[in-house]
Image 1: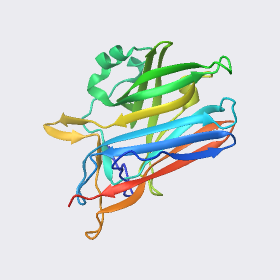
Image 2: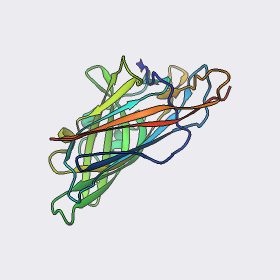
Image 3: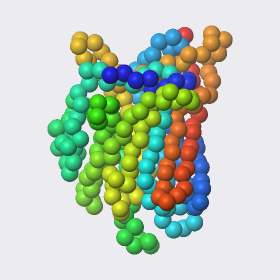
Image 4: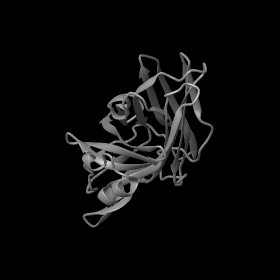
Length: 253
C-alpha cells in the first residue's frame, strides 16, 4: 500500500536547533533531519527520517498528562508498505526487545529511545530510559506503526500505536496519531523521544523503500527552507502545543 507522505517540499539535511513552543506552564520541542542530505528534483529516492522531541514544565511542577501526539510529515515523496511484512500488535505486548525482534524482525522500520517519568513523588520522579523499535503494522485495513519500548531498570514494556491517516488539505500529506494515555495508562509521562524511521526491503523481486522523498525545486534553485514536520502535543485537560519545523531542501540535479 502506498500513501502520499509529503505534499509540500520539506527536507532536512542535518540536525539544527530544535524548535520550541510553550503554553500554560508546558514547554515542548521538536527537531528533525532527513538522510541523505541531497535529493533528486524529479524522482523520489529512499530516505530515513529522524525526529526528536521533549516535554517539560516551565513552572517547576510536573507537566499535565499527555493524552495524544499527532505527528505530520511534509515533503514530496511517499510512504510505501507494499510487500512489507506486517507485525500483529499482540505479538509485542509485554515483550522484551529480543522477543519483539524474534517475532517481528521482518516488519522492522525504525529504532530509537524514549524517556518516561512516573511522578510517584514530585521531588523524586521515577525515570525509565527505554530502547525503542518501530514495526510496520495494520489497523482496520490502514497502515500503522507500532512503537515498542522496553527497559530493564525499572522493568518497562509497552506498545505505543501510531495510526496513519492521509491529509487532503494543508502542507502535509500524512499524519500519525497516537493515543498516549490509552497506551501508557495513568502514571507514565512522556518526557523525551528520538526515533529514526526508514527501511529498504525487497518485495516481488523489486528493491523498495518505506520512505521516499525528492526535492522538486525549479532549475535555478538549489536550496530552499520548507516545512519538514509538525508535532501536536495534546495534554489533559489542557493545553495543546503545536510545533512546525522548517529544514533545507537541497537538489542534486
